[in-house]
Structure formats: structure tokens, C-alpha cells
Length: 606
Image 1 (cartoon, rainbow, N blue to C red):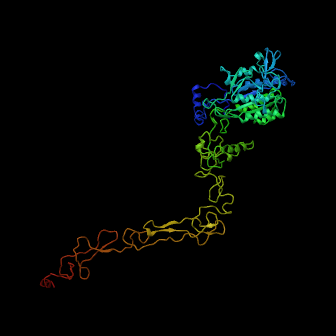
Image 2 (cartoon, rainbow, N blue to C red):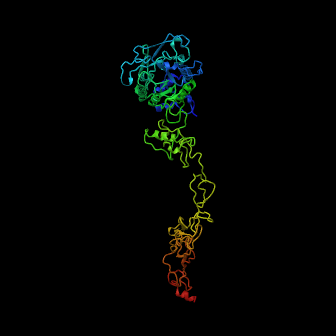
Image 3 (cartoon, helix red, strand yellow):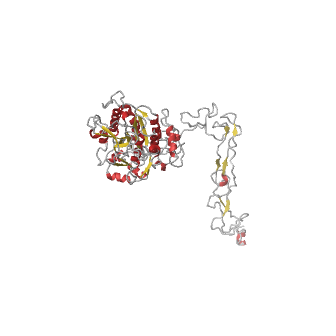
């Protein structure tokens, strides 16, 4: 529940002046959700009570009222108003109007010495009041007397406002002629016309002794157009000064409204029928926008009727994106929500949005106290922060990994499962509890008994129980990472249906690895893709550095070329030249044997 409406108290002048200079959106800065003491004071409703003071109110109804005033309608009406003014003063700004009869010469004891007379210019019957310009609907009839003006008209202002004056009219003490009486006719039309005059501009006393200006001011002076305006008419019968339908027209005029200081106003008229149902009184209530008259005869039933009218006006803020308390704050004290990423009521302008809210509110019932949340208006994060568009109904969350209601949590309160956690989805055959019910692959999603889900691999079998073998298996790399001609792709053979979930086919599995081996060469690369670099490569002939050029190898030469193995830097097994000796060998490897040796010397050794 939101905080109850506070009885009006003084608000510092500085704060009030500040509020009056702020726009409605800026005024929200004075309305933090958790600080009621900072909220501006509400604009209390103006309620004009028209009491029936016609002579028929002396009719006895059989029981004494709870205040002990008496057993006639006049007593029960005064007792009910006394109790109501006490209960609602501070929450409602009341004004009290009687019919157009003068009461004089009263003593303190009611109503023995009181005398009654018409006002000057009275027309068409005792207590009907003047009608300066008779015409259609008797619009100029003056049938009401403001006995107690609205609090703003009390001059000088008092701490208790106008409550003492209200009480003086219903306390069963007639000192100074201050008590609701019962004399004359019932100029209901004229009283409603005077109510219109009072609200729309000013009311002038029938003897011209006082003028009460409308209590309505301007936005610059602190007025807010959300302030409720009401007339409550108490009557025990029809208008007997004008045609009864004139009063119906007067109530319709109040509802149609008027403009004061640039603000358009409409006044609803409630009717309490003090003598039971009356067709014309129902018509007045209907024309005044309040349905039917409320029947009430004794003070308790009158109090109940008055309370049914006043309580909604004096109530606390309601989470409906409306400034119910009329203090410049909208939905103070309530959390403001977004409505993102789920089914919601789309709207494009402020004229459409209330339709969404009204449709949602109509879906609330005892059986569905939360209403159909899908009917709530869609609300972005920016709209969540805007007093003209924020949402005070919680649209809740759906499990979608999004903060749907904009309160800083994602999927709060939602059931999730798995690792990592995921939102429930329809169960599928994948070895996972998709629907978060604690079971895996239940409900026959894997195609039949005996097949247990495994991730599909390329082996010629239906591993994932979908009645197809080797489907959806991606190709894998094969061969060697380097060189490029040794790197290949190993693709699974085409998927094939199987006879039943989990079965295999004869020719499934992978194709051969497609690579392109090359002859091995001494280049530190595995050219032939056998996994060994530079294997089985024959050594090459070599000569060590510094070997003389032009050596002859082979035949009778002693020189032998060396061998350089792949990967080795040393020329191994090389035999080089030596000085020529007489040994039948070409020692110096010039292609000649024993060249340069003297024949005689050579022969000496032969």
C-alpha cells in the first residue's frame, strides 16, 4: 500500500515558491520515491455542498439522529454533515450553500424564534430566489446562498480555515442565524447555477453584502488542473421553482465546464436523494457525470453516501501514471518500471497509451489480481525515466537474458538450468535438460527406446538418435601442418538414413585424407609427407675448402672426392693429392702417373 494522504500542514514558503516555478517534469525532482516528507502538498479537492433547506426538510422520519438533534430530515442532514466535515476537513476544502431563503431573529436554541423571508427580487415562489432575466432553462435563476465559502475565501486566513464556520451551520446552535434551516421551496436549478458562477468567476450575495471570488487560480500561482471539483447536492425532492429539467441542464453545464486563468475545468455533480429515489434527481446526477442519485434517509446512510463520494477524492496516490494526489508529482512512492523485450501493448502517442492502461486495468479481477501483463504498454528505458510515460505496474520478467522490467536484474525469479545457466526451451535429443525439469531427453525426443544421445561423430552410426548417420559432422584437418602439400581435409562421407535411431551403416565414416606428397629434397622440409624431414637422401660428392682446382679423380689417381650428407656441413672421406712418387699411382692427381721422375732414377729402383 502507498502512504496514506497526509493532513495538510504548512510547507515552507521557499519550497512552495520553488514548486510553482517548476515544470511538471522538474517538479518530479521534489518527489523521491523513498522520501514522503519531500513531496509537495497536494491540491485538495474543492467540494461545494448544496444542502436542502426547503420546508419539506421538517418531515419526520421516525428516528432521532445519532447527534441527538431530532427526528426530521433537517436534523439528520445536519448531523451527517457535521460528522463528515469533522472527518474530511484538511483533506477536502468544503464550501456550504443553502437555498435562497433568509433566516433571521434566531436565538441560540434552534429554531423556535427564527423567521424566514425572501430575498429582494424573489420570483415564482417562496425561497426560489431572483430570476433577473427569465428564459430558456432559467439560466439566470439565483437560487443558492453561500453560507460558508471555500477556505481560500476566508479573510483573514485562520489556522482552522473555514471549519469553524462549517461547524456553526450544523452544530444545532442557531446563534447569529448560523444553522441550516428548513423553509421555502427548493430552487435546485438556481443553486446549481450559483455553483457554476462561484466556480467559474465569483458569487455575489443576493443582498450584495459580499462577493466570493472563484477559489481557482493560475498555474503561475500554484494551481494544477488535476484538482478535483465537485458539487454534492442533497435534496428530498425535485425543483419546485423551475421546470425540473432546468436543473438537469444546469448540471450538464457544470460538467461541460469553463476556463479560469487559462485552465479548463469540469465540475461533476453528485446527488444524494434524502427521500429515496427520484427520477429527476437521477437525471441530474447522470447529467453531472456521476450516474445515479444515491438514496439516503438517516444520518448514517447520508454519511456513508458522502464518504463514498469523498474517499476517492481524498485518497492517496495510485500507481496509474496519474497525479491522483494533485501535488505535481506522478505516482510518488512507487517503483517505476520499463517493459522491454516481451509481449506488450504498442502505442505511438499519449492519446493511445491510456487505452493500453485501461485495457490492462480491466483485466484485473479477483481470479487474476495481477491482470494480463501482456496488455501493459511497452515502455523503453527512456520512457521509464519520464514522468509522462513511466510505468508503475510491474510487467514482470520473462527468461530471455534481458532486464525486461528495468529494475536492474536480468531474469530475476526465472527458472534456469545447465552450465552455463540457460532459460528453459522445448526438450530436444541432445543429452541436455533443455526444459529444466530435471530430466534429460525425456518424452521420446530421441526417437525410441534404446538410443542414448551422444554427439554425432563420423563413424557410420547414428550417434545423436535422429535416424541419420554421420549428419552434421564437420570436416577435420588431416596430414601435417606443414608443408602445405602435406596439409589436407578429412571429410565425412555423405550422411545416410539408418533403419532405426542409433543404428549404423556399412560404408560410413571418413573419406581418405587428401594430400599431395612430393619427392624428398634436402630443404629441411618433409616433402614426401612421411613425417620425417630430409629422410633417405643420398650424399653428394664434395671437396673440402682449399682443395686445388683441376684435380683428376678416378683411374690411377689417388684422389677421391668426399661425401657431404644432407644436413652435414663437413665434407667427409676426401683424399687429396700428394707429391708424385714412383709407385705406379697418379699421386698428384694431375692425370699422369710418375710424371717428373728421372728415368734413370726410376730404373734404378726397378
